[in-house]
Length: 218
Image (cartoon, rainbow, N blue to C red; front, side, top):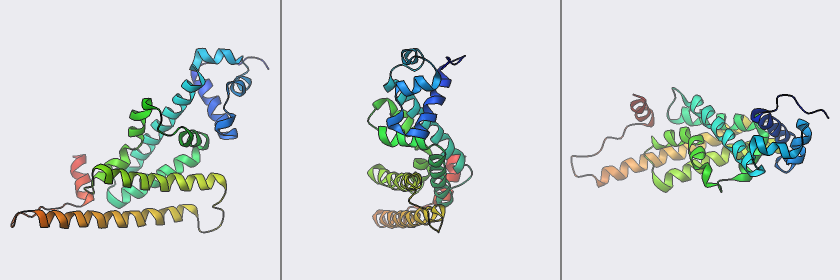
């Protein structure tokens, strides 16, 4: 195979994604990547470093794209509408990037260098969830619940186990609505608890998630 003219970092990254989409994470080796690009595998080190460096860069690119996609989906929305839009954006992004999603799930959060990228990818979801007045561990519980639902549906689709009607999208929307129903109930319970704890005559006024999101945008 003749060497590919104009080989650069971007070309190597694109070829790596192609292999991930076709063969999954186990198929992404430097031997396979070099064969696809028509180069000796040693030359890959000058473009993308070690195999671990390549996996990290691919993972970061996936997280960056996911963050951009979910933030764009939530623009102008709040509360239930925003959470539904973010969940569908997670799902559609995973369907469009099967290899990178598999890499993400395989790599997990073990690399401390990914902390900033992971936070960026979840920023839209965290922002909307925060408007319900939840914080700390409870916020993380809800973030995990939504992310697990979205990634779970995507993984099931890639595995070919969601073939019968109704559509997976409709089922995902049902799951998201059920989660939001429980989230809204939690927010109401927090409001009542705060009202009982407040001094007489000074009960706090609880704004809706939509109102809080609107003031945040201002």
